[in-house]
Length: 161
Image 1 (tube, helix red, strand yellow):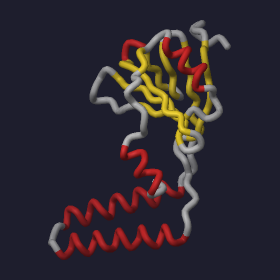
Image 2 (cartoon, helix red, strand yellow):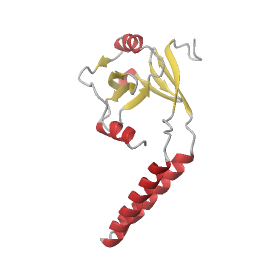
Image 3 (cartoon, one colour):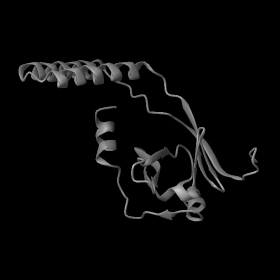
């Protein structure tokens, strides 16, 4: 596949913007209880800023729960990677790693040279991780020390966020 600017596409796939978890009625009851508990704590300690923050986070999460995920297109091209409309050249990226523990984790990670930018996580979906790794090794260094998901990723899966 040749792009408008004649760059060769080395790999391309799509993935959902986020995983929409199936949540039971018990989950919603528990989350409402947690929010009410935190609000009561905030009022009891007269920490009204904390109460406002809890209300805002609860509202954002409730609205987010109603949203369906967009489909994101990911491309590895000769000059870098493209995530939807965002392009990142190889110069901007420090390294990559793949965590592949079937069936729960199949992700490709990119670390930026700019420490302010967070790591990018790309679900591998049905891609062959060995082939993707071979392509990326031509352009980036692989971080072989990364073997597990971060705590925040694991915790997010546990609480279905």
